[in-house]
Length: 290
Image 1 (cartoon, rainbow, N blue to C red):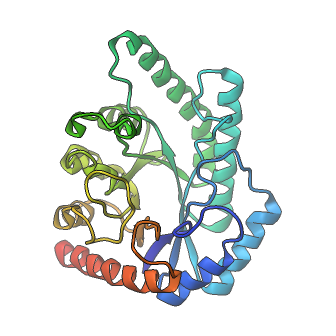
Image 2 (image 1 turned 90 degrees about the horizontal axis):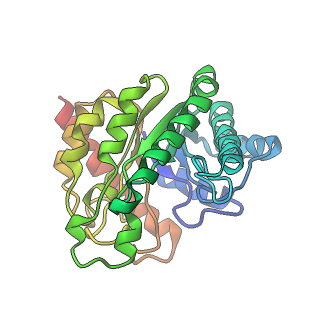
Image 3 (image 1 turned 120 degrees about the vertical axis):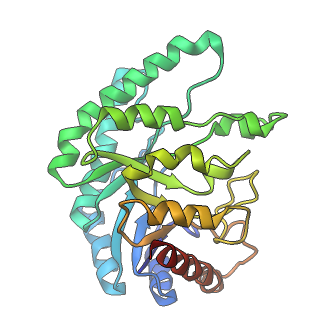
């Protein structure tokens, strides 16, 4: 059983043609990633229709990439916007629970390295804690965990800093948050592509793998977040397989791939090619776990 992100071609609009192609390519589960960077709220009618599409194509929901929001940002410094962001996260929790998933992925960004903004970092940490406190009982009652994703300072990479190896990440922040909340509520989403941007940070996140609940498996060249099929970049897949095999993760392996930088223009051809790498990696994890 293998899972693929729903937005491997596009993340808005009618997903049904792409869900059908996923199923035909052999994927059994979906990581729902549509509308992850928007203020979009799913209505009950839309959730029900997505459920009908999943049933029609024989797919199951693995987990969901929650939307951090734009104006409804889930730990915005403005209280009205933070509360609106909480409603957005609750919407994704409801989506997940109704369709049979078990986790919602959320972003918490690395703190700024500017000394003059250090007090602001402390304020944002407190805002994240407020938001998690507001969400904890709601999520636990519905059997849905929040999975915090490993991230780097994307603003620094987009600015083309001179030494990308010095770009910061959120490993310390994730460790602090995971230590503050129980595993039935808060876990880790490991993104293999983010872990190698600038330098390989995989082992930095290794101590957190006992809280692994969601996977974003994809590859890149170590410079840009390309979401390539596995084995098409520089990820050390043997190391990633060992960490997964030793973790409590027991769901279908989940791949967050995109056609955009793959060299393919036809989704069916892209999926056929990508599936080869997915199956190869699945065999590696299985062999490593023995």
